[in-house]
Image (cartoon, rainbow, N blue to C red; front, side, top):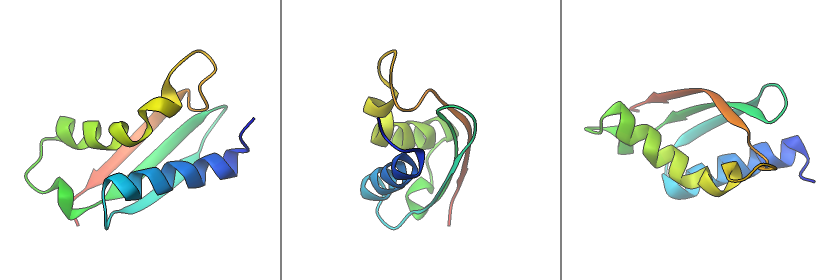
Length: 81
């Protein structure tokens, strides 16, 4: 079983790898729920949906299956830096 703080670090690292130069904040909510804030120039010119898809692409495997370490992203705040 992954410790929540380790998972928060893993989520942050994956997003930073997928979106180089991004500023990422991961806050654990309830059981396997998270809030993400991602600030990046990469979002410039992308629709809100494309921005979200980019972030989700970094963590999709962590959300797959009945026993996935991430159950939900409760809130995703995305900004262009």
